[in-house]
Image 1 (tube, rainbow, N blue to C red):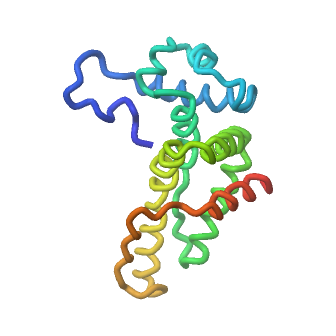
Image 2 (cartoon, rainbow, N blue to C red):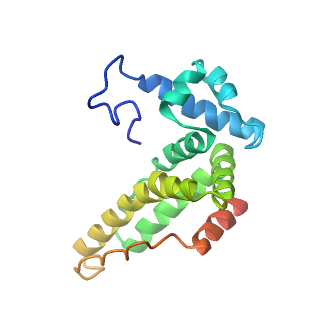
Amino acid sequence: MPSRTTAGRAGRTGRPRSAAADAAILAATRAALVELGWSKLTLGDVATRAGVAKTTLYRRWSGKNELVVDAVAELFDELQLPDRGSLAADVEGVVLQFAAILARPEARSGLMAVVSESTRDEALRERIRASIVDRQKRLVVLGRARAQARGELPRRPIPPRPPGRRTSSSTWSRVRWCTARW
């Protein structure tokens, strides 16, 4: 995951943000979600668990929604595209990794919480898309390139996404279904 400690540093003065603090905050957020659940999670509790001041959290995240999305997104950044020799086998490898991540209580709790909240919050849906979905497109691009190099797919450009197209509600239904199974 691109560190929030270096993002947007140009033109800023003062002490650089601590990557260790960021990591502690995101880990504390996931632990608190598992233990307390979405409704009881507070930034104060996260700050205490992470050993930082609440102001440290508010300098990095504007609220609970953003913090939880980033904590969950970090888990999905672990996904890698294995090279198993065929597109089908490569996809299977990613799906197995995805299932293993969803089997973790912190991923399941966090993802279900933000998906549920996003049904009422367009800004949160956009944050999820940018922080989780869009960042994983790298796997699709790499998988397509490998499959083309192996001759499994024709070499033609990926058509551009139509402007304003959103992730469908059926995508979120699949996410919910997957998390319920694992």
